[in-house]
Amino acid sequence: MGWFHRRGWRDLIIGLPYLWLVIFFLIPFAIVIAMSVATKTPTAPPFSFGGAHPWVNLETYHRLVSEPLYLRAFLISLMNAAGTTLFCLLLGYPMALALTRVSRSSRNILLMLVILPFWTSFLLRVYAWMGLMGKSSWFNAGLTEAWNWLVPQSWAVAALPMMHSNFAVVLVMVYTYLPFMILPLYASLERLDPTLDEAALDLGSRPWQVFVDVTLPQSLPGIIAGGLLVFIPAAGELVIPSLVGDASTPMIGRVISDQFSQARDWPMASAVAVALLALMVGPTMLYSHYQARAEGTK
Image (tube, rainbow, N blue to C red):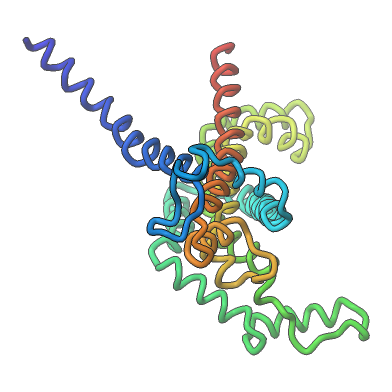
């Protein structure tokens, strides 16, 4: 009975995460897939199955690959997410590497500063950036002065038009998601053996060669993990593009929101959501598969 009791508790603990995934991921995802093959109707809810229409209506997926609105929104989302991931990596890698080279007491303070923005409201931080990018702000004035100093006089401007642009979207997303890049990189770099760098230096390698040949390859798992943590939410971002982006170049999150709320076309919105999820989950599962196989061959 004792063995059975322990086995039952173990199975319960292991099964709870799977139950959570079934209830809050698989079932909602199945509902979204079902809505994506339904037919739009003027009823409530605004879709139906069967009747005068086929049970499985693939018109939404045909529109998804044929209408320029959705293809353009996907392209803009992927470009903005890729730019955000690249800038987060360029900024986050030196910061994460510096965190591993300072004393333990200083490291704890710096790590606290990295996660400090999460202690404030996400919307408040976005609104703060909206104020900074305004034409009358000190931030805009400083960038405008630097711009006018670098470019010819004919290109000089009174104020840089930063708001309602892809530049503003990428800038705010880099600020928002930078900690998601720093923390995985720090976790990966902290596990590296510093004696390998010392051995490479003793053998005549220059510091940049040590970084390229020793540090960078070993930190690749952290780079990939941080890249996924930044790229996936950035591609489906809704709030930041809605507040600081250009309505004429919407990202895919804004398109899904508009289809659900304004156009009341739930099947089309569901099809876009399914395509976005497949686009994001597919590479992640592929990476996990090859990573597990690589670790199994070691």
